[in-house]
Image (cartoon, rainbow, N blue to C red; front, side, top):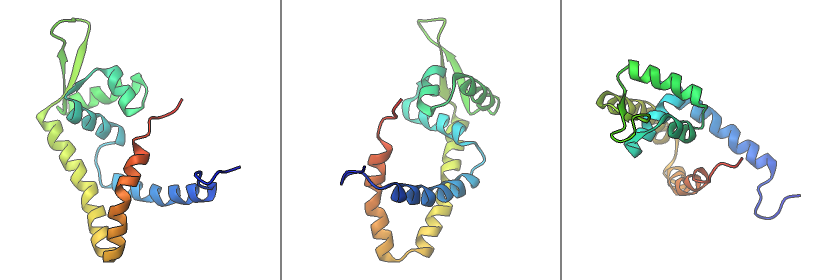
Amino acid sequence: MTSENTPDTGFVREFLEVLHPLLRRMRAERTLSPGKVGILHHLSLHGRATSTELAAAVRVSPQAISLAARELEEMAFIERVPDATDRRKTWIVLAEAGRSKLEEEARAGEGWIGRAISEQLTDDERRILREAVPILEKIGMEAPRG
């Protein structure tokens, strides 16, 4: 049974069916996996992180972070820095090349969606879409369960 505040499953399914192709198309414009972009993005916002913190932030296993971090380090996008006080701890930081790559990846996805919005939507549709951004942001800020 659904309450007034709970959207029906048909709406939720339709919403996801609309989002998936958009996200897939944006990702197709990028050269790094979403997980690697997530790592670079997290580091750009927070300055540094441990592997454990990155795994939680990007929502992948520690093993996946280890592999992705190793690959990003080989590409010179991140660096590992020993902690100044705890020799057991190593920080992962964003290298300048990683910052540039993150900007490049963002522009790739933004370029396609920007063109689509300007070429395919009416002024009213662009206004409605702009008004929907804070609502979508609110959904995205919800803490994951479980």
